[in-house]
Length: 272
Length: 272
Image: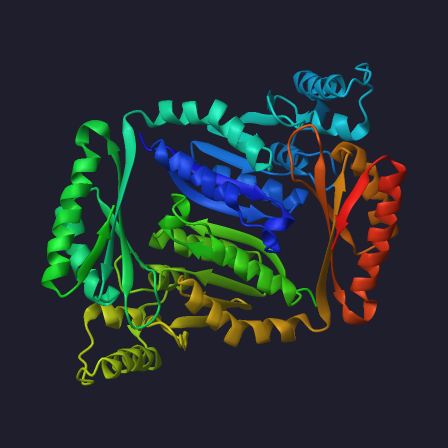
């Protein structure tokens, strides 16, 4: 079954070009590898209004899964849960399971430093445990801020922290198995050819022909150099049921492409 | 004046996690540096429907500028101009200026290789010159596919190629001067402090206090390590008129933060 996924990445640091959105690339790759179809990534600023409206718009497109990253920490600019509460028209309230999770992290930290473990939670720590009503906290084994999980009009929404190691661990533990089950027998395969001495406009009809002859195989050309000695990657992908042998289908399509390209004066420089 | 900008990045390669969206980061940084406010980045697949609907949604948010990247080449999966034509409800037609640009690149190439310069345009080459009616082509000095520029309900839309060197050159030549003029006297300043041995939840009220005392300065905390020895970047930014001396305002706010942090047991490890 096709499992459509949307990612929503929250953080001004992404929109001022301070950091690469490696979270989106990592999540997109992982979700694709387990057979899902990532349809959209939306990157937005740390404002409650933007978070709420972006989530509502995404839910209207009816993906099976939405993953948000960022904005779960203790500081004022961490507004994701407030944005989601606004989208749901629910109040934020301290969630007892989430509070236990936050406390647990604080106690572990105190223990390691041989400090007293009788800890009074501060308002910023309580903030991390305040979820919209009827939302399930998700344990964050290596960070203080828990994630969250909710259902919204048939879409499962996971709310993950922005710190890459924390986000990756929660994805691997909780979301990947779920996606794998939902994608069923679908698997993703890919294969690349690198081509020299032939222009993209010359390759275009050859790609068209191979795609017509190899249903389910998608071929995309990526010019890797922009001057007078063309060097182009042809990237072949297929997401299909294992029993339909996507890997063999890609090999066949790649073989046909190579023959056509060499007939038309191109050179295959490498294939993987 | 605040100039709101949205970026729309088109390409399956971004949504399968094959490549980092370095175009979005680069554009966001450049636009921010010249005083603009990048509000959103949307990454979508190579389908005409997605391109059309994403453009329409972005225009409804009324940014002054939208920049799209990708999907201008000669192959079947390059669908940006078709998507824009659908959004505009206009036909694609060969644009004579764009055709001249494509021809020019082909002739230059032939000349360098001492090949005949009497060139018959192929359908994939003509495709690159087919723009929606009433759209202005934008010269691409280092690639074959021209960009495009149009106005949509008061928003200026620039349609750029996805090859980074081509995109960057067109941005620098054509869009940056325009943004600079629109942003007027607004400039962007930033400054970082690196802090050890204090938790983000402990920093939160200190940041709040400094932001209340320094209007226009935004302080964002980025935990750079996720275990038991906290290491946090505090990133201070301001976009304001040059005469309001944003750089001095950041220095003052950073100074106040340092004092508060050291009072509360944190260590400043570095400041830039």
